[in-house]
Image (cartoon, rainbow over all chains, first blue to last red; front, side, top):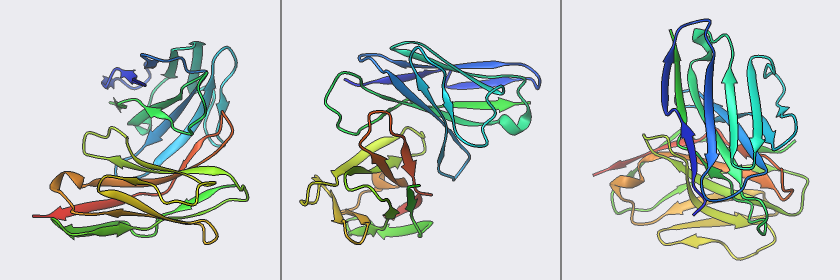
Length: 118
Length: 115
């Protein structure tokens, strides 16, 4: 149980195009999901907190218009990198908290999505 | 703001030996969660062990155990009988108890296991 799936796992795009990454909780409902960015050999940096049915909360320094987050259902959050540039190339990871259960503190992670912008 | 510090960027251990990864954190909360995550080359985040701050007993999971020192705000991970598959990046993480609380990670440590 508690599986989170990301799609695509790997994407290459041209500079200036937009890319959408999906994060799905497969066997549980997730009111809250989190999006992270990770550069090679570095830690995970939180980009934003995604809440179902409301606007995402972005961390300081993260461009809201650049990284659009939509959490339209209890099992799906999407991250859209708009007008991507090579500096947006990174590994993006989502995590989700299972709603409606006793809070164990644990978050469940997707497999990650590697974005390469040419 | 909460911070998590992992001061050692790399460590190496001989197969079958024991290694301890250190972590300190800073918080003004009295109740919270602490985690160790493993990230192998596949980059999938794998939960190794979890500790609830209100529990005095140190968490254990098979070969993995923690030394939780709440007053010192220290949370080290001990890996016993190290195996080649333990080689990975390990992240210490903190999370407050609120439902929407975020996970704060340390910088991570790269563990290599020598055969």
